[in-house]
Image (tube, rainbow, N blue to C red; front, side, top):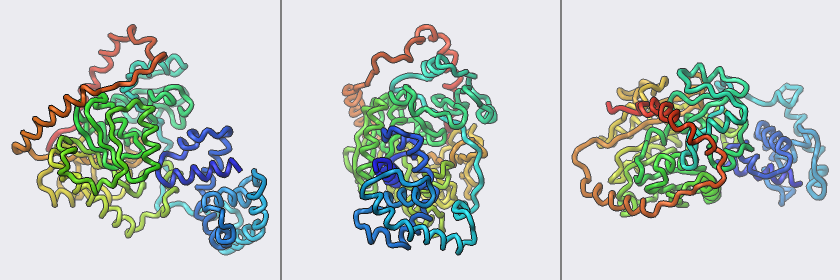
Length: 484
């Protein structure tokens, strides 16, 4: 039964958005990763079909101790998989109901006029098969730097091809080749499906497995070392760790999330990444009072609220939503929440820059939210974020081109949207800025930076010093934004 309990636990954690499915499988510690991953993936693929069968046969009503996710993995193996892999009471329950479950599946096939179970799967409306995306990793500069990570991979037999000059180069990677990204200096790019879950650099927190598009918000917010920052909807924590790296662990990050379990998972991730400048709060950001003196020095806010997830190419993660559809009603509800939380974030008195981002492709959650907010709040304007980025916001209002969009076809990433807000200048809060400097100095005095002992990445550091300067110089010239 251990297999089914672990698989059901992963389904539950994925539904709470505690991490990507593959990452949760590797973190489970289960001895047969391949078997577990296959069961979780296939159960997710057939999730709505399995749930329908379970409900129609009243399985949970008759077996009070059986929970939906455990039932799903059991029923999957009875009806679709290679047979049950358990004994004891759960096997007895499964065998007891097997005939009824099989009969319901047979009736469903007749009703849908299909002969194979896989033909019951309905592709997402308007879905287009996305190209296999490169594997992106972000170098965690709290523990190492890009040069040392590059040297480590070269010693592992990888071929470093330098900094990419075009997106086409990223799409041509194969075998053990890798590149430095052309837009983000701490992103390294590998061929699709390169697996780092068991790599030392990942388990030790030297690299973060994070899509390039997901790295844009913190990169564009670009808080200076010592700043106070709010990460409003923070879990699972990759963006928070990115902010901490930009801050060099100096200053403070106030990170909020309403889900206790997601926040606990986030704490583990931040510990592994060496983040020490954070303060986690199990709290609804909408209930945080902007006038609270605690936040009087917050000049940067990263807001990545709940969204439809329609831009995620790995549909396994998207399938963990209760309703995978993007109905007009659902989008309207999401957009209403997004407008509300964005307006709330802009009420913080000292905030100078705010990044709003989603992993959605829908105009309702992206450009429409930004346009509505600008009409309601004339104290802020859009900044033309990363002018070299090829895909811009939909032209539905005059400055929409200031926003960024990302997609599998145009940028070789997941679908994403980013808007950078800046407070209009006008002699604001000079007194507050003075008090913030005092607070930041206090934070810096309390700094504690974790240093890993026996770091294999440091082997070539002295030899590469000159090369590092020449390598990094062009990256410092990357223009992140311009005010329009």
